[in-house]
Length: 319
Image (tube, rainbow, N blue to C red; front, top):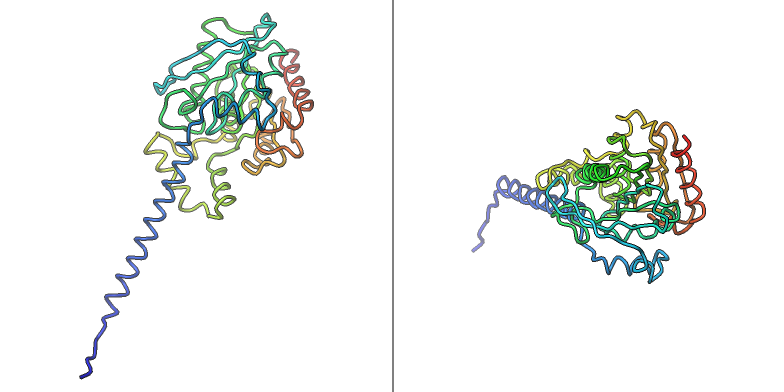
């Protein structure tokens, strides 16, 4: 006997569509959580691991770090986290020049070693430290400059209370460079800044990385990831924008800035430094190094880098 089975597609189709939409939504949320985690909670690298990396990749001599004259330093951040680092003391310590170095995303103070010789030879006392959620400092999240920039100003407060230097400079690479620009734009005690491979705008940079690394569009992952960052650590990604900070400061005409970027950088495009340079008014310098990848300009073209630093410092001293 044949049985005629009547299928009610008016019920099945909407249920199937709803199921597919739920799967798409859940997948999107999961991907946004993964993206947000990569941004605000990168893995911590130990000092030993980072030192070995820079010895192997950036030409740092194995004995260099141990040969430095170092003094331990620590301070409580504005978010309540203990930040730890070291003062690096030059042989000639009579110039009263201070440089604060700010490392990049997912790294620690060892990333600053490759820059030290330039400034120690010029009599700078240099502070290197682990930012929040980095190295041996405390903190659950990295905030891409949102909380890190106010921390730099707080560090300047501490330095000035002890003995105000004649010159206060900042140097940052990658996320640290973005942090340095935002700090300089807000804190006019900064006499000069060096921005090595900064992103001009965090939302724009993350959209670029999403497209470059995964061939995914900005929407909806970037807005969702930004919302997750807001819920977990208090900021939307569009709130971190060095280029907007420069615009608000009318181009920051009174603070000389050196922008450096490797032309082979695929992590943060060189155009970001070009865009920042275009907005900056007053003294500005742009060093674009052929063949240099992300934050490798000082290693690829050390003489050019040093000459650019000398022009910058001369502008500060004589300008």
